[in-house]
Length: 107
Image (cartoon, rainbow, N blue to C red; front, side, top):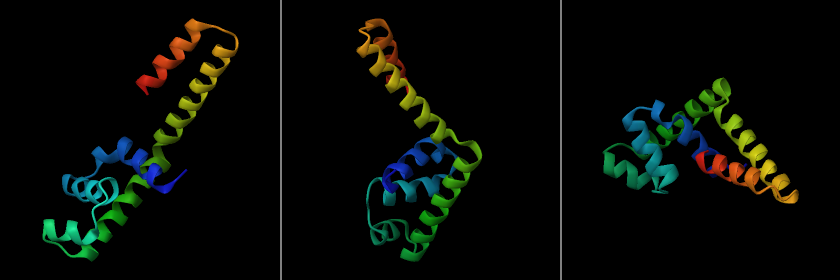
């Protein structure tokens, strides 16, 4: 999985477990693509401080995933439901295809 997509999933699942300040920095650098310098200037900290915080956040989010496996489970369920949708269309089962689509929308 592409690193940026992986970071997005990790943040979606575990971002609320970070402090507000960590969330602010992580969102700015990783999700909104601001430079370290821009974020450092806005927050009144050094570029190195921003870099270190993003690195710590990544490590923390990855540790949560290693313990809880929520992203892994989500991706597996999504793949299985997509497969159900494909099979339902192959066998012309409109109701199963609709249920599959509804589940994917909820995920």
